[in-house]
Image 1 (cartoon, rainbow over the protein chains, first blue to last red):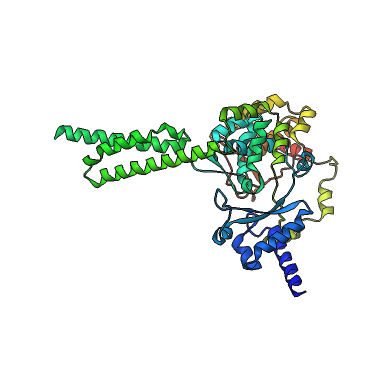
Image 2 (cartoon, chains in turn red, green):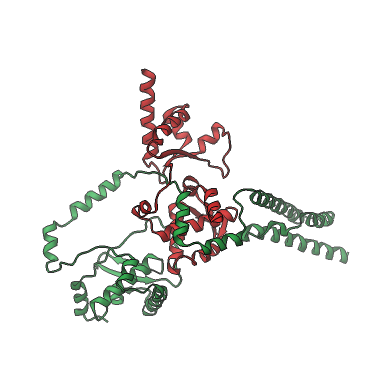
Length: 183
Length: 272
């Protein structure tokens, strides 16, 4: 009974940590979870994941490194970021209700898919040229800035665009590129 | 002695060329196999016995370092090509051209699992909100000031404006550009121009149209607005080139009321 009460408390604590934003970015680092939930935190996250499945949500970990290790060490897990994401997918109608326009979504898809297909980086000029095929010219630069602000992509001082944390957390890059090529 | 010096100069030039070529691979995203590593190493090897000064040896070390970077790029290139993520760039662009916006959107939704995040209000934001609430004039007083104006307010999307024929889709980009040039012309030698002097027109309808287009200029980085809180005057400052704002931490919305009353006041003030 005591053990059950312990897990219930830890589950609640994990839920609060993962759902509410504590920093500028959502999600919690592995070391923060370990500090609050104890060294057994992966077990508690697995338990939470089972509960969330019924709600079409999931706990997802994103490696701090570009390629995630198959069996991460404790030090690697400490640096990983854990999020709660949607397990399934959204319908176009739901997306519209979330305030996204079709133009914005299509633009984001083009930008991310282009960067992924170009080995993880692409020049902003090249990406904007591609976007101009689908979006009105005056929206192109604004949309790219918006994707950068949202954390989907990042830009270096040489004008190269890279994949950023939100894309790694939210988008199945392989599926996206494969679906575009297969259509 | 002379041919030896000439040979060293030639060797230095070769090393610099190798360094530039290797750097451009990364900076310009060129095909890393443009560098023939075996041949380049032969050149470095050939000139190595000539180097005496620390500068020359540093140049040699830099060239070797850059070749190592080029080799890393070549290795990554092979890994990417053999992975499931590789797509021929030309084929990929062609696919994107053929797909409609709706089709791209549907594909994207199949691979998108958005993060769930709940925002909370911080104590400082709560304090700000309290201050704002306390300084707010009671609603009945505000309504008295607005007596006579019963128009409904709301937001309009470009699609709605297209339907109402306020704007024309194909012409909108051109129209916006023309409008931007007009703003720049009017602000020549002044740096900034009073908002109402730019937006105000002979008719109220035209004024609303101009205000709508001005909001686009400000939102999409072609101009910015500046508020003189003391005088309660809004200025518009045009940019020579479009400004990218990815790092802007606080992008704020500035509501400006374009009522008939405001327009009449501006007309009566006899400006422009």
